[in-house]
Amino acid sequence: MSNESGEIQRLRRTIEQLSDQMIRSKEQEERTLAEFSDMNNELVTLQRLLAKNNNSLEAARQQAVDAGDSKIAFIAGISHDFRTPLNGILGMAEMLKLSPLSEEQENSVSVIQDAAKLLLKLIQDLLDLSKLEAGQMRLELGEVDLQETINYIVRLLEPQVRKNGNQLSIDCDPRISTLLEGDPTRITQILINLIQNANKFTSEGTVRIRVTLMEDDEITQMIRFEVEDTGIGISEEDQNQLFQPYMQTERGRSSEYGGTGLGLSICRSLVTLMEGRIGVDSQEGEGSTFWFELTLGKKDGNQSANQSANQSVASAQEHQGQDMDDEAPSVSVLLADDNVINRQLVMLQLKKLGITQVDAVVNGEEAIAAFLSKKYSLILMDYMMPLMDGLEATRKIRSIEMDEMRHTTPIIAMTGNVMQGEKDKCMEAGMNDFIGKPFTLEILSKMIEKWQQSSEPTEVLNMSIVHEIAELNTDGDRTLLGMLLDMYRTETPGKIEVLRRHIVSGDHVAATEVAHDLKSGSLSLGIRYLSTLFARIEQFAKEGQSRKAEPLLDALLPAYQAACASLQRVSKD
Image (spheres, rainbow, N blue to C red):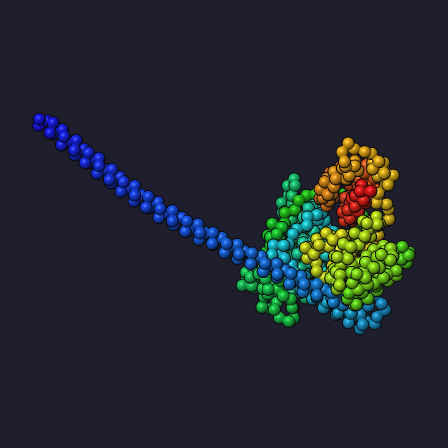
């Protein structure tokens, strides 16, 4: 009996222990659940805070973007407002200098030109800085002929250098490839800025340009550019801050030298954008050497294309200041600009180029009325005008051309707003090209010559081929012409963009293939004018002279749109 009692006691203790463990386990579970609940509540709170912070950050980011956009828009507007009167000042000064003047009068005109060019540079620096700060500066890759670039800069700046009593010397490494790939405009901009800086702080001394090959492999070359002067030099303290915006040395801030302190900051930003390095070596009183290094791609090229470009520049320079009486009868121009000074200036410039058939209007509505009443070789269209601006006027003119199956008239935008976004708006509206104010007689001459070469009248469609296709029936409700037009619309814009990239990059073989394909597809639909453009581009590419085809690229989209509109009307009929 005692054994049974002992067994019962052990079982009771075991049950009590298990019960106690279960209770403790339950309590632990409840504590764990409570802790989990607390953690979950904290997590929810954190998620809410995170969402709130994300909203705040997004709002702050958007506010910063809006502020940046507003700043860009403001700077662009100010740029346009300044450039418009500057165009009149510089243009009239150029025209005045081409007339017989006394030595004193020539000197006075030179002072006007120098002052206006300085103001123009300050405006451009502010615009560049704003674009760089907003991340809107884009590189435009193309062929870089460093020897030609250096020669151009020397021709441009040597008179300024000599005026300061300085000697300009060049040392260009012969191992550097004839043609490289990079952004030639930005490289030129940096070199001009550094050379002008060196010349500004040097007198009766030397400014030396040195271009050296640092590294060479199968596809790239690293190039070091140096601009060395024997000028006033820079202290070590100033060197540490020299590339900051608005930073100038103590002596640089004096009225003797002038400037805003933006040039070197812009140079640094452009070099960084091209993934390069920039710096300065200097000792106060012993001159300075500004340098930057860039890695540029190697590029195959042909001398004939370069020779052609050089001949074109030389030809334009020969025409500057000379009448073109032999071309005058074949060129008629419609000029739309609301600024009376700019109208007078452009008319004088055109007259100097031998173009006397010019009609001038003051807004977009008058431009359309003139276009409807007379045929013009070229339209120069101001961007900003009252009643109707240049963009809306261009859209209406393009619509009229499509409706009446007219040949596309080249329309050149004229504006002081040189932001890339504004250029894009001009192209989207149907304009063919863009000329920024202020512009010289030479620039205007080249623009007119460029678009006269590609504006020969021709039929949009070969109607005999179109009618043959239109008369063929299909099994469905839609006509064969309508189906083919839809296929053409689907494929062609993308192919045109591919062709543009191949031409700009100098890929002659690929450009030839794409141009041939586009030409064949266009001819099969009876699209005459556009196919002739593709044929000319194909021929240039076959000859390895893609650069010569570049002026034709801007004519492709308007010609394509005109062809599609004409085919659409035939299909409906």
